[in-house]
Image (cartoon, rainbow, N blue to C red):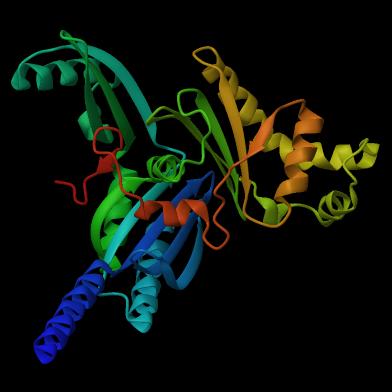
Length: 346
């Protein structure tokens, strides 16, 4: 009897171990960021399960103000292909997270119609705005019923030829792309799933100051209502400002330090005031800040004092991962998140 029980337990443990193994998955996450004249490629390989382990991290940069961009993208594709081959990760699926300053969202309200009539109505409305929009833009649409007679329609649009260039790059790199999402949707899912916001019913503006650029995302309930990328991050902070921030004792600002603070932060804070002002017309706005280095606490207090704002620290702050990269693993919301096609017809 004891032998049968022992064998049974061994079999059960084997099944549990097999299930745990099945739940763990290796994959690549490529965050592609376009801001002004720079194109950033941030690529990580992860083994994901209950705990996420980063196996490697690769970063690349291309300047877009060059007539040979296509050739340079081909070269970048070969480099990434070889790097993934070396890391033994080329065979694993890739989730692409687009953090693009050229993506914009149109919102409109349409009457409830049959599927065929609704598709025609959407085409007519988009045609009024953009003419032959299907030849100009790649689009992803979300349709939400509001009441018995109306639909709320949101359409994310991005330049079709620019998008084709991205797809050709992914194809040249021989990446096994399984999904192409928008970074701001992934970022929103991360902060909602991790319950980082204290008042989800309010409009919330999250400022993420990264190494090379900063991302501002407006969230209300389950939707992204604003998105902006600023080409400035903490790696670009002048030594004089970094030293002044470290020495500041959180009392009155020395004039020289306040000047340095405004010089460093005005590019970001101008967008915060612009976006936050628009959001405040519809609801009260809560502001949150996350800085991907050790200066967060002091910088938060300095911004609040200098600009007369009440900005909170974003709770649940990951200590290892940059938010925009790892957020692509969060479970999405099919009714709220835009997903772009992985191929285009000529």
